[in-house]
Structure formats: C-alpha cells, structure tokens
Amino acid sequence: MYLTKEKKEEIFTKYGNGKNDTGSAEGQIALFTYRINHLTEHLKNNRKDFNSERSLVKLVGKRRALLDYLTKKDILRYRAIVKELGLRK
Image 1 (cartoon, helix red, strand yellow):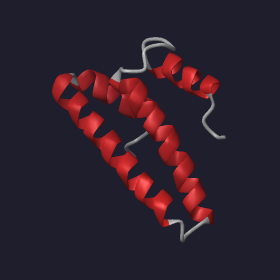
Image 2 (cartoon, helix red, strand yellow; image 1 turned 45 degrees about the vertical axis):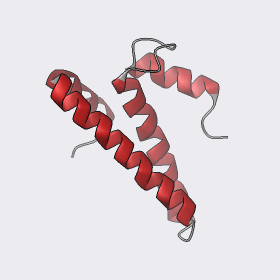
Image 3 (cartoon, one colour; image 1 turned 120 degrees about the vertical axis):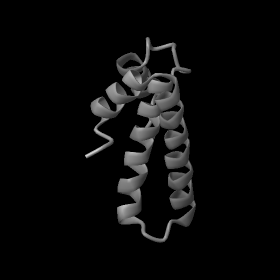
Image 4 (cartoon, one colour; image 1 turned 120 degrees about the horizontal axis):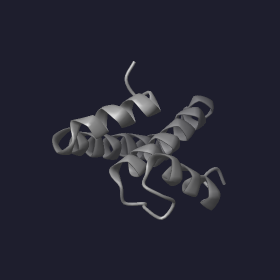
C-alpha cells in the first residue's frame, strides 16, 4: 500500500500542527496532494482505469475547496502552503 500510517504521520507532522492534528487545512491539502501525485502516476501507466480517474478528479475538487477556504480565511497560510507544495508554477 502506498499510503501507510507512518507516511500519513510524516505528512501531518510536516505540514500540520503535529502528527495528531489531522483536521488542519494545510495537513489535508498536503495529504490530498500526495494522493493526487500517486494517482497521476498510476494513470500514466493505466490509461483505461476510469474509476481511478474519477477518484483523481474528486480529490482535485476537494483540494481546490480547501484551498478556496484558506484563501478566504487566511491568505498568508494559503500562500505558504502553495509555496511549500509547489502547486502553482
């Protein structure tokens, strides 16, 4: 499995407020980004996997909604997470 308990803890420790703070917007955005990158690589090899493609689209939408929330709530946190994850080119 690509997403182990240790990997989740690492993501939430790095981007959230600790390994147990799974509700922070930054932590969730980082987790979604990790999952999106994994699904993107999977779909490069498996073009006809439409269920995974749908999951990818839903994840992108969830991440976009969280990013929009952060934009309205605290623009500095938004800019920091976008810069850390490299979401904008």
